[in-house]
Length: 227
Image 1 (cartoon, rainbow, N blue to C red):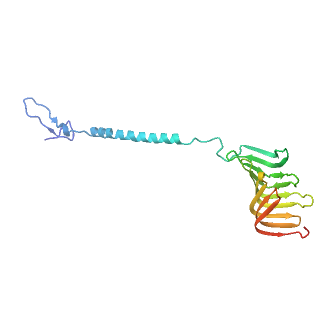
Image 2: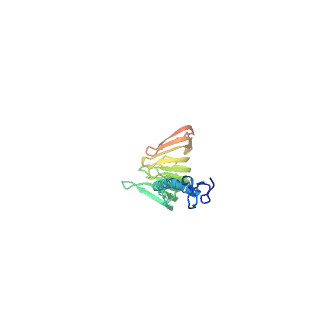
Image 3: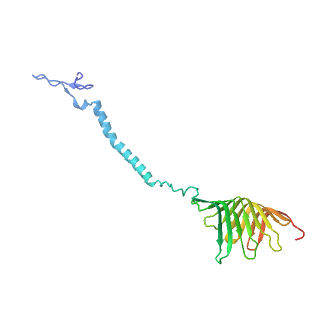
């Protein structure tokens, strides 16, 4: 059996001899070309590749739909939405009486948490039959609803002198105030002076209604014997 010139790499069996001469015929089951094998592989791989492509497209679409929209409004950043300079704010109570006056060199309001940052604040509180209380600091921070105020850096609280009473001065680096309750608190070192009397300690609570204060720890003091 000789190789067939028509079908490479295959063998052909000759026909039975007859009166007419004819060309050899290829044995079809074994005559498979390389192009045919590649076509079969491609036909088997195509459905698999299509399924993978569809799965990848579905995953991308799902992530795209679920991805949160980007917020360009600035509300998620701690950026001020307005700034005021050299301002003064006055609060009048329900009875029409002046409760406090707040002044500052600069005020910045932040929409993300509703807080207000004030530079060089000065707060004056007034009550009936009581000397005014004045608070100064390098910086202040007012909460969203205005129910709390914190003062930072060189905080000085002064109760002005009154009839038969000397000026009272409190010095600290941090002070938290709840205006509606007339309460003040700090956990930092404090120095309190009244006339020639002096007290120092760490931590203080002050009730402006009763005009009473308490030093919480490490208390030391000197008192004027004439008082």
